[in-house]
Image (cartoon, rainbow, N blue to C red; front, side, top):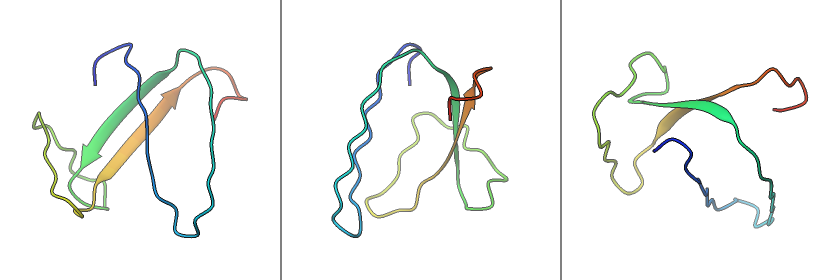
Length: 70
């Protein structure tokens, strides 16, 4: 992702409950992809392609001094 970019996440819930959350702001985050659920080997290749129905392991960290921001 480019710096100062907009990200939209679309997901399907198992119980068909629709949840909408909207917010705006600037956030300092880091995001890494991993090739397994052990999160021991980060993926360094770019672009990183995954197949349909392939598990995708990602770690996202929020860097903030605001204790109310989760």
